[in-house]
Image (tube, one colour):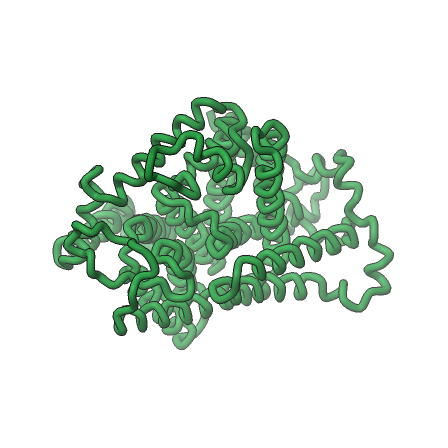
Length: 473
């Protein structure tokens, strides 16, 4: 059984052996002679990190067009760095390609076939180009964040940016900002409540933006050295959590709850061996019970939170629930008609096909569920590949976290934040598709890149005894 799991998660695959026989990988190093005479390429990783940091720092405040331009710049810089690489200069034990890369490459090929077979090929081609840009952004992130210094700098830029976003959101709450659209059921007791949206323009989008910031700020509380940085991290966590509450986004609250639960479990796992023997087995149940009690007390003790929470279970009596149920029903019909490879990637393809299935008065720009969205875009083949990618990613994160725990390496706290952030974003994504907005999808790939950046290829002693000893120690 263990062997089957290892094979399923690609835990034992030798990526270097695979890339050595790959025709595509032979392009790596094509421009290596240019690197020797270039003034910029020796600073390639730092420049790449700067491009990523600028994109994350500007994303909440600028148009999606500018984000797209920055995405193109990131993609081009990754191509340049890859073509100018020195493959033999790769640090001992570190592989630039990982099982996560292979799973995403497979998903990209599935999306390519879905585009080729799409009933709206030109619209799907737009979606494929966007997906390609996001994946190339991930590739550069994962590459530059192999450096702990660059990783910490990129995370710090995002956390400080989220603090600015949240402060403005709280200011909107205090001033009673008017909604830009009808975001609350007119028959709800909370119909006049202020829902903040900060610079993002939508409460649900703001909530999705803040969930990974909350996860990483929790990690920063433990990972950053010194009391002042820890106090700053705690401040970011409190301010972001407060702002997320004021969004009154039920999906955002769900993502927050799952994020906190996940981080609490991982924290209990990290410190459990330091507890007295009788308490070790009780650590995680006590943490889960205590966290659940706090959430329950908050729901029961805060009337506005209680009313908004209970509206999740009102079915079609709540207009937002009713809207989603009708959209989901139409999307399921779309999936039934094209179950294998779907209609092609991207919201342009969705917007071209959905009107043929929509119910009267229920127009939609997306499926309002990440799993349904993937199924309608790339069929059950694409959805299966995506779920496989998640298993590989979390399995890799769990393996590295165990190693960090054994050596008391503080990088484990960043992994905890990345794992908690991905679970929180997925929980929110089950009932919404703000995930596909560039301000949010960039953060998803940031979290995945953090996990990927910790990947270590461990050669066998037969292949390189000295390297194996170095890596295993």
